[in-house]
Length: 443
View (cartoon, rainbow, N blue to C red):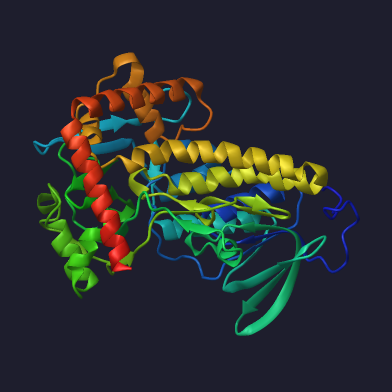
């Protein structure tokens, strides 16, 4: 184990309770805790809730699998998950085009899993504890204060308040954006605002082309898109991500009624849901997209949704949480060992992650455009462009030069197609502006 030291190079003071304090016990926080503990650091992982707890983000990407393997949890995931081999996107005639992961370029595995997030998150949290992490539940971090050497967290446990001193702070609090809010770093993404309704159902029909239920289906409709994710145990996760303007039509309707009304607008949903029975409450979440102005600073770093949240259309949430955790491990470990390197490590982390997030975001912002709809419904593998898109859907957006070259070609095709369909492009732009105006008026 490395000798504990403060970031000013002095030996750790007796008052320091741990080397690294991680706020949030979701996939990102648990992954980072395991990785840091394996490198010999004393890690405290605090979660304000109790596992298991309900969470969306149930569909994993193939690029997730090497990270699960790295932390020694792949076989545990396999025992919990349902196999996922690709993603369906609908055509106008009611059929689907399937992007299968075994056609991806690069080295991503040809599969991933779909999971009950409560079970998976609990597994990862307990896995971190098995690696020596001081993992605690029902502990809320209220506020943190930084001094010249360390960070002190004010925590609440069972109604009592106490302090916990660490040498480094990681915010893995997800959409709570704990540190981002304290430091006033959170900025809403005005380019892409939406909200979601979702629930679990039994006896949802599979796509006839996918009788095994190994594919996630993504269905567009006039006001957004819907997901159908087959989960273990015969349960299907169904959700609708909607534009802000459509949400104004709610007019006091409850979540259940509004969900039913929205599903009635989704092409193909009536057949899929004909014999379905809801087995969970319908939940609602709004203000989907945001980002913090900074990812890191002296003795602190943000990972996953604590830094930024993208629309979940490409199921990137868990992968990005765990990928940023893996990258943050190098930053935290390096800063604790060689404090003079902290700034350089954080800059590299920032630059690398912003580029990858931007590649997902480019597709997300245009997903409901007429041009993107056409390209996804009738893909052509000219110069391996379709395989490049499949690689993006698999999560390979950071380092693979071959994949990135194919995505650049796809962007060129998109631009040319947009010019050739200028009328539709203008209509789409005007609709996006109208949605933004309606959101502003609603506020």
